[in-house]
Length: 199
Image (cartoon, rainbow, N blue to C red):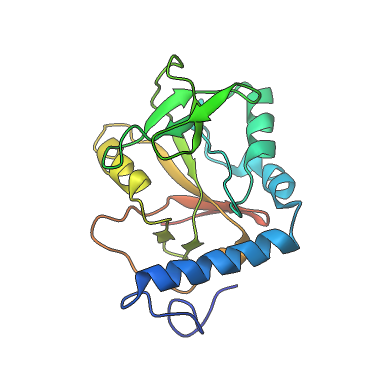
């Protein structure tokens, strides 16, 4: 639900208390997840609207993040090469290691499920990312670790940069996400309601 007055009406001002704003957005996402347990399946139903890509980075849902597993299974069935992000150090860009549904995973440096170290490192054509909130200009509020922002900052200097697509519940949209100079904007967002590209 898009709010009309400020980034998120009734929530803490993110310019003064960003941690409290993130906490409020987590509560909103948790409520959306509880109300829509089939959102991951509905997300996958719109996969044909994603930008074309041979290799796609997905993620393993943690907590109330919208679950991309049904989407990953459908993409793999269509011959797409999949990978998962891997945190190798707290202040380093992410690596992307080849992965397929059912592959064995282990915790990376941030404790997130990741492919084993022997898995091939690849550069995806499309990166699908979780988020806490997004807006109609491609603004994205992440968890606060900065991993995707650091990673995209480097990848977007490449002559053929990957697409950067958010996966979210439609209700995570807000009027305006406050963006810092290092924050990376989304090229589009895929929700249980469909896909939308941003300018």
